[in-house]
Length: 434
Image (cartoon, rainbow, N blue to C red; front, side, top):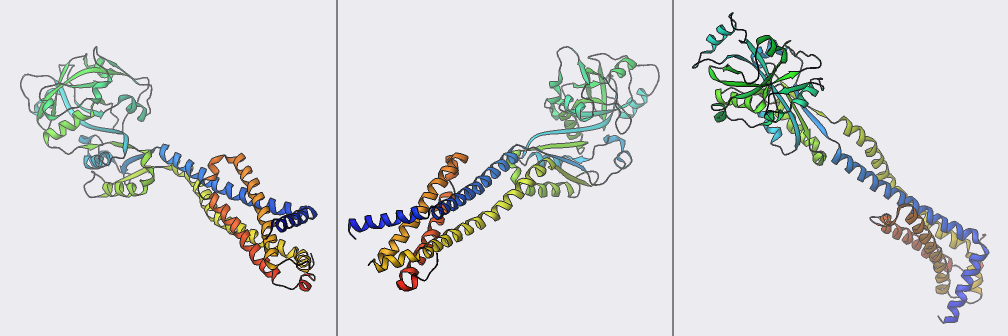
């Protein structure tokens, strides 16, 4: 075609648009609406996934090892263990999983203690001496709670305002010290006992007491006391003395006793929450295997906060995931359908062009150029609207491919319709009503 032919064709397209601006505007608005709809769905899917990832990586899930069914701890486990029933193997498996960022372990045991004596006395002699008369410093078998952080322990027991008054040069850090069997033979175990016991028994800081545990002897040095602003009793109705958890573990190891815990509470690493279902099955298997505890155990994953936060986002994501391909398919059908409709509505103009000598090829090019012009204008406006609402991030991912599909649907519709119109005789086209 010559340049003059192109100019004539462009002038004809312009006059068609000028004569029917509502048709042109409708085509542009349809394209804008489809681009905004696709952009909104894609951005909402992306933001939903980002929020889910944020929640997955920030919401902490707590894990507790508990009894599988309620029992009478004192009757079924015995007073000697002071209610401890969770086996050390389960605790070691969980801590060794690499998924725990924090934990709280409490244990306990009834230990017979008395004033330090010369030499080593058998356990039964010490018990007889303790319960005898005449020495107000002598104590009976006493419940010990073994822990790492006294503040966390008191908060767990519902007594957050409880304070400990320590002897000079001592503080709560001794609870987190590392005790071994070898250290037990050379160092005194620091303990904290209730303040009323100090007063009733006439004990003071740095008094040395002797303990017996399966006929093994050593020393415990009283270095602190309770200053309790409330009162509490455990399941046995006894007040506890406090000692480092690692010291009690070393005592059990030294005499060949199995170590058990009263409380085993773990904080799961939020960064690994996506694999939580698999880890839940693993921990549950550890807790339920034979010999895991003195009673049947089970694991409780306290992930209610995470599930409540994730559930509505998952529902939204599932809905949008279904809605997105439907929206893309509808946009393709509308693009093709409106292109076909516009060409057929311009069939009378095509007949005039054919009568005036326009070739079928030129007629197809006129229809194609007009529809592509409207489509590109709609895409440009749609891109501008999407950019205003969501910025350049909206043009990543599937947005541009979807825009290309929309343009392809428009192209397919106009080509098929133009070929159909160009293939008819002018007299047939003149019979088409606009």
